[in-house]
Length: 126
Image (cartoon, rainbow, N blue to C red; front, side, top):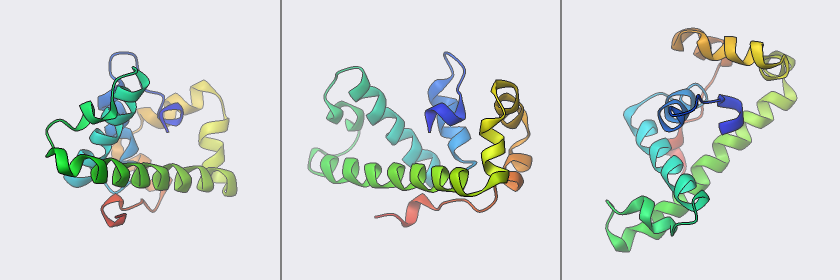
């Protein structure tokens, strides 16, 4: 997903969370889920124990939350890539080159949401 949202340097986390809400229902719950997904990915990517991303969570809950976040982000990625590969309209957003991708992300949130269509509800993925 990070490749599709094309975040700017030093704005990666903020833009990942914000832009992924084009594909997922925009809400505080989605924001929290996407924030934790990003933190887990970033922590692992930098060779740190994944548990470090969930230190604000009770130790007994960390593994189940991490597994749920994995299911949620996998579901979102699958839905996004499935739409891109089965819809010419959606494929055109990301296949038109850097300028077209940038133009998509420079649109207002409501314009992107309308162009993308139905969003995934991350809160329904247990």
